[in-house]
Length: 336
Ligand code: ADP
Ligand code: MG
Image (tube, rainbow, N blue to C red; front, top):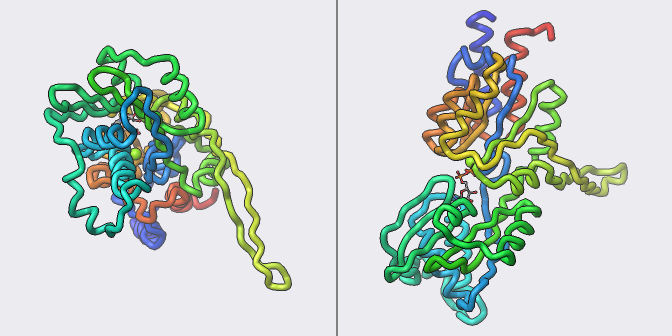
């Protein structure tokens, strides 16, 4: 392609909210064989919400939620934010607190309701640890519990499995080294996810999912149905709405990948010379975005991810992955 063609392609991209940082990446995108998607915040909306909280000991529910929120308050993780938000609502808005306050009042008194925990540490790919009056609080996944010698009773394990099978992430809580409760967090898929996956497959590109989340949740998300609603007017101009379930058919799922491991996954797909694209939003996606032949960052993602990528998808819409590949194909092999 001529420099003019590259310039035109860059302009077409920009008009679609696809920022292309260089001609090399633009050229490589045409031959992409695998597109590796990060799960959280890339395939999913990144709006995690707590759907369940269950206490397995005699601890009071409000106390349990405040305890977990206190441990997560210093974490930047989306799961942590969801937990703090849920606990805050329980604290200020549940029936017994008979609140008359506004959201603003709540914000001002935010720090006041949390327990004063000490020695906080974030454990990447696992969760968080801190202490309250010398007693340890652990909030995170199974790996975190197992590594710290916390016994997971069968009843708790069964509950977590149930959550995972319905595409939720189970977060375990240990207080004073005893398994105390579990929270279930849901993060719905982006509406366009299923159509984009199918579109890529039709283009001969193989979609892959990579995540730090557990295998069962990841598998459930990869096979989830997205509700697609089509609105149209019939000949009498009556608005009709048709909803259909559409399957997200990602077959290749790499789960329980530690933050440093995502770049390794990219390299493993490159081993036979295949051209690999990585789509991600998080800090822990940036090494993988840099390692990929074509790194695509979600515009709403972290600055570090955007910096590491060759493409920035400003609309936060996964359809732009297809647009990016199409622009490259049209620019470099217009006969196709
Ligand atoms: P990803 O961004 O790919 O979903 P992460 O490496 O950030 O993965 O997290 C992987 C897993 O580690 C999460 O699914 C969760 O189980 C656990 N985890 C990480 N940080 C936290 C946290 N602050 N609180 C609870 N669990 C956490
Ligand atoms: Mg992510």
